[in-house]
Amino acid sequence: MPEKNSWRDLQTDNLCRAFLKLKDIDEVYAFLEDLATIGEIKSMAQRLEVARLLSMSKKYPEVVSETGASTATISRVKKCLDYGTGGYKSVLSG
View (cartoon, rainbow, N blue to C red):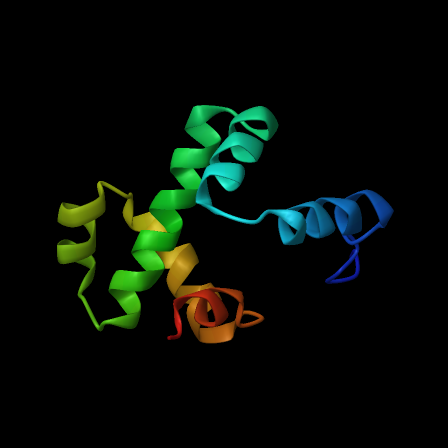
């Protein structure tokens, strides 16, 4: 079984550093558009919105209705919120 953080490497470090260099929302949009497909970007945005709604104690049917996410996606995001590394919580706080 692979290590939990086996995906961390120099290339991924460089990707993380690239995000940290961006100064405003327009630069983030430009970088994301160059980096990923629109579908990939929309999927990430949907997961973040699911996390936001779940953190507000919204129920699955409400989250499905508001985001169009599948219950499988909602369940995966919920698992990350409850047992993950705190990534969603760090960007949703404040």
